[in-house]
Image 1: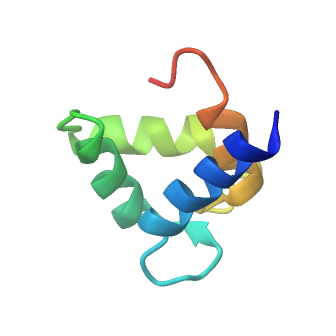
Image 2: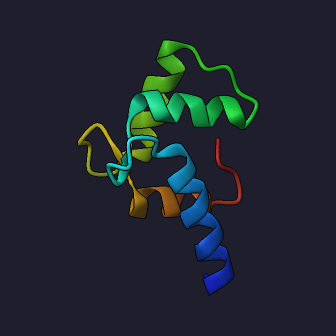
Image 3: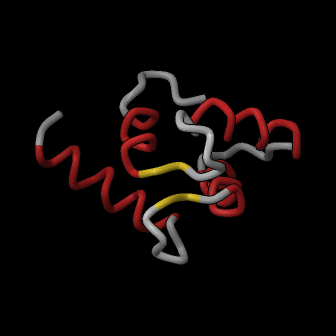
Length: 75
């Protein structure tokens, strides 16, 4: 991944990490998914969190976000 792409991902992550905690919580994930054009149900949101939260702590870290954002198919 080049520096320009990493800078873009950092900016996107920062935009959705509204509380600046360094991770994206389920509420912030919902906002992100809606911005991507999805209208997830509670079950959809839970499944997305389960898929993205690789360490299962209930939050999406920057590293987890980079892994997800770098995928060709995000959802």
